[in-house]
Length: 77
Picture 1 (cartoon, one colour):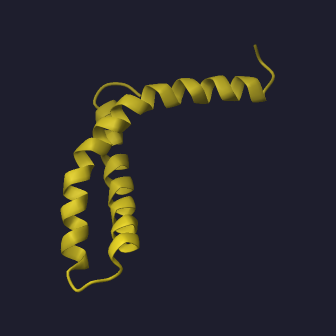
Picture 2 (cartoon, rainbow, N blue to C red; picture 1 turned 180 degrees about the horizontal axis):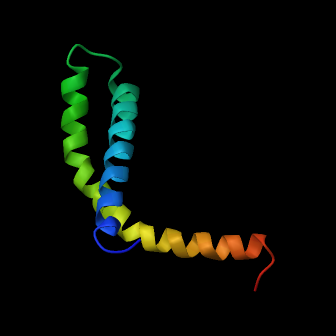
C-alpha cells in the first residue's frame, strides 16, 4: 500500500476491530447494565487511538511475515 492508503486503511481497520473488541470485553466484564452503550463508547474512544498506532506499527511486520509464510507454503526459497 502506498501514499495515503497506508494511513487510511489502518484507521478503518483499527476502528472496526477496537469497536468490536471493546464491546465484547465490556460485555464480558460488566454484563448488560443500563448504561452499557455509554460505557462501551467511552472505552472505544479511549482505545481507538492506541489500536490505530498498533496497526500502523504491526502492518509492515504482518506484510513481511505473510510474504515469508506464503513463500514457505509454496516451496519457494
